[in-house]
Length: 258
Length: 245
Image 1 (cartoon, each protein chain N blue to C red):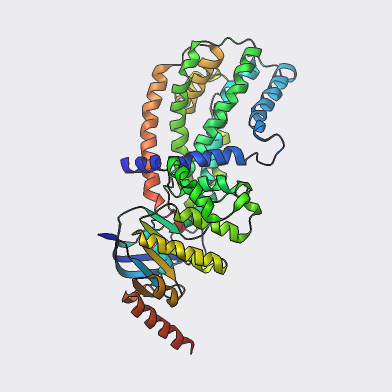
Image 2: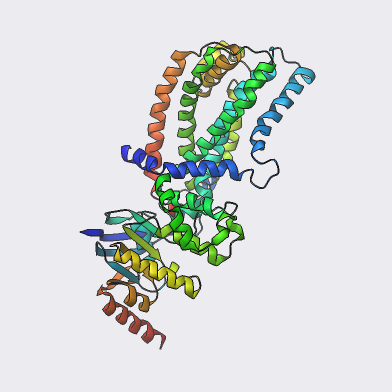
């Protein structure tokens, strides 16, 4: 494990370049270029604001922002897992020609989406101010929340990436599972609409305390539930170690199986 | 000092008659998949002292490239062991990992980092790489506009400037025009003088004689002959000539 982490660190420049490549290549050749990174969340924001303020009036005040605050981190999770699943298979040609720690590929997807999330804050923060939602010192908790989420995202990306090498249709299965997971996570709805008898089930969902934490710090302006977040962090640390171990176990045959 | 040591190396590939890749099919055909084992390497031993150049020679499918890929850790051995002392750079395909939309300069950074260099190391070597690739102003053009010769020059330039202790080369010298081949050979000789260890895969006995100190002739995964480059190259040339005639 230590050796594995040391090697990933030795290839940090590759990681950096892959992230830069992903961020730039996506929009290279388009007229608006890098600005597209901002248009995506901006358009999302406009559509939701119009729909939920004029078309379908939600009972929650500022529902568009209530949704947006949780939807952005959800997109970070969901995009990372979906793209992570394809990351090894897509780079098969490279894997067959050059040795490098294979962990770098799913990890670069995770970091790319993390950067995209951070960039979307440049839309989110002004939008919150425009909707007259008060920003508080609770925002200082964001790095901690993001770190815990990244542990979840990275673990899942490692696992689906290596599993997809052996089971190619996993990519599509993951797509369906992510949709199911989305509806089981309080993104569209607040956690208190969940019936009490279903609560224990929802509490098993690691995305629930995360979404709650984002809402707390951005939307309600109070500190996140540190106890819930702490417990989650411990569980996710174990998951991360386990997923790195699994990845290490199966990575030897990646070049042959692709 | 030994740079590379291969001890009783065996490599098995599983040949699938009908490759079943999806989860659905795997469940349906559980335990009924027809596979055949193919041993690409059968008990290969090789000791490469530091600073020597070894040629791996043999016909297509003899296991040369498999051996090279195992030494470079792209593939893993089924049985046996490979010990490597020093930084390895592998030349299996020139320009693997280039992004067509990026400029030559951007691709140098990308490619060199895939080969394991840090940012500082890349910056130190940047001018040398650009000079070697002889791209002139094209260095700031996207590589999709490059001719195949330019593409290969850049790929080779990056790979050899990793300054590896051990350089593994798989027949890439067979590509490109004569001038490019000459240039590659000159660079390889320079690396030899600097004490690099080189393992070279080739079909050409002449190249083994010219460049290598030692040679190994592989035949269907087994070592047919091993020893001084000249002897092995001549025996192989005779064998191939005899088979053809």
